[in-house]
Amino acid sequence: MSQNGKKKALYPYYLRYVLLAALLAIEAIIATALLYPPRVGPAIDLTAPYQPRPEWYFLWIYQLLRYFPGKWAIMGTVLLPSIFVLSFVLIPFIDRGRTGRKKAITAGIILFIALAALTLIPVLTGQ
Amino acid sequence: MIRAITNLLDSWFGIKEPHRNFLARALPEKINVSYCLGGMAFTAFLISLITGLLLSIYYVPSGRDAYSSMVALHDKVWFGWGIRSIHKWSANLLIIFVLLHAVRVFVHRAYRPPRELNWMAGAIGFVLIMASGFTGYLLPWDQKAYWATVVGTSMARTVPGAGPLIETLLRGGPEVAGATLVRFYSLHVLWIPFGLMLVFWAHFHMVKRQGISGGL
Amino acid sequence: MQRRDFLSWLLKSAYGALGLGCLAALPYLYRDGRGDIKTFFVKTIDVDDLPRIGVKQVEFPFRGLTHKAFVVRRDKDLFVLSPVCSHMGCYVNWNFVENEFLCPCHGGRYDMTGRVTGGPPPKPLTRLPHFIKNGFFYIGIRA
Image 1 (cartoon, chains in turn cyan, blue, purple):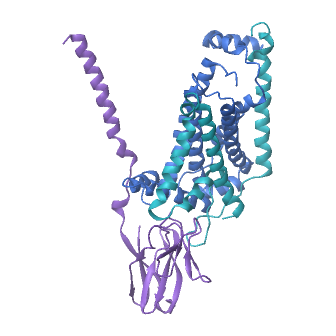
Image 2 (image 1 turned 30 degrees about the vertical axis):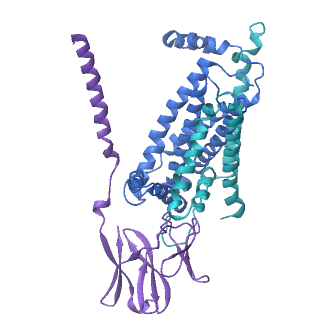
């Protein structure tokens, strides 16, 4: 490691890549911001029919609310989202023991498919 | 000239020496571009921080004036729409970068000991970023903001027993009203950014101490 | 007990008490407006404009915002339904074609009496108090 440490050290070798990536991030943000500026939405009106939509990263939870009627609502509002969040936060503890990696990958894939499906259903059906 | 100034600053703060090992440390060979995603996320965070500071110059957090202050930001303030747009998109891209960063760390299994706490710090930071998105969504105080928050806070009511109490706590009253807006404003501009900075400090400190994981 | 042990114990308990004291300040964050809630009767429409049959959306100003409610005439019954969906608090709309109330948020459905006929809502639409005075229809809203 230390023989060619000069070339592999963070400074100055990798720093330029980090700065380049940061620049790319800045440009991506400014470009999208200039291309797709937000509008001023209509003012609060309690009488007009209105279908609210959350931001895309909350669509999954919004969609989840549809599936649990009546007293089951807590499944969609608290229990399932908590399970999703906890399994994400606790990934290092799911990956324990000999079969740990398999369990972690299974959890990760289930999480990904569930969230992707719940996000895509309202986008595609336009509900 | 610049070197003289940095040397002078360093003689006061002594910031170079403790970081020398970190900067000169050889990084694992398998490193690639995907290792920059965390840095890109932090860049997006900094941009949302700066534009947020700029927006707070004109935004009036009150039920009566919030909407008109946002209209004025668009109509009267030079590049007001642009600052708001950059704020919005930096938040969106921040979430995308953080997700990709998490996928990268997951694929490289870089959350394994001794880095499990660092994964959790990042995951909690992600939850805080989502909370920031939720509270920030109300601030324009328009139709979309109002009804999204009605739904978002009503969810708390489904908790057995404590539900109505939590809902009232979130709303600052029985309904989504001016008190809710002030509450969300406080969370969005003070509490959550402060919490995020603590989490980020812990996250980066652990990266510095433990080094970058060598990948698979 | 040693003097030093006693001091250490005292210090720990003092900080413990301080911590508990901070917890006791939590109600600071909880501001319940429920105590101030009353039923306000708001003057709305002329009694001649009440629906002879079916559902009518009535709009009326209250505290700087225009609110709405549904006046329903069914056989001999006249009642007022709150527009607040019992699921997540969105305002429902009356659908003339399907003869039902539809919630735009998660597709909750109610019939003209406010009974849930579909979707996730747990409870029927709330009925609001009302009366007629001097030829005008008054609706009571809780705020």
